[in-house]
Length: 86
Image (cartoon, rainbow, N blue to C red; front, side):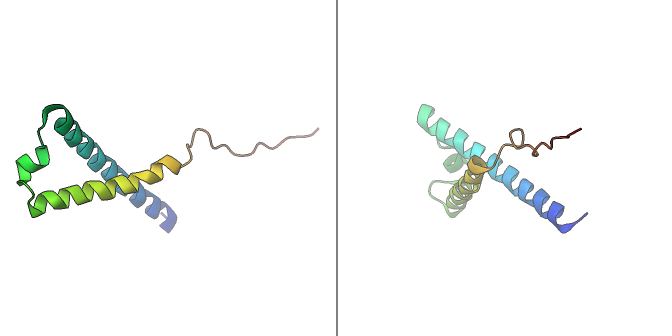
C-alpha cells in the first residue's frame, strides 16, 4: 500500500464523517423549522459549551462538504480513447 492510497482513504473517511455531521445538522434544522424543537439543545443544554462545539463541528463539516460540489464525477471522467489504425 503506497502513501497516496492511504491519504485518499483518509480523506474519504474525513468526508464521510463530515457528511454524517452535515446530515445530523440538517435534521436538527428541520426539527427547528417544522416543530420548533432543537435536538442539540435538548440533549446538551441551552447554549452550553458542548452544544456550541457540536454547532461548530457541523459548520466545519459543511465547509468540508463544499469540496464535494467541485469534485469531478468519476462516471463522467473517462480516459482519452486511443484510435487504432490499420
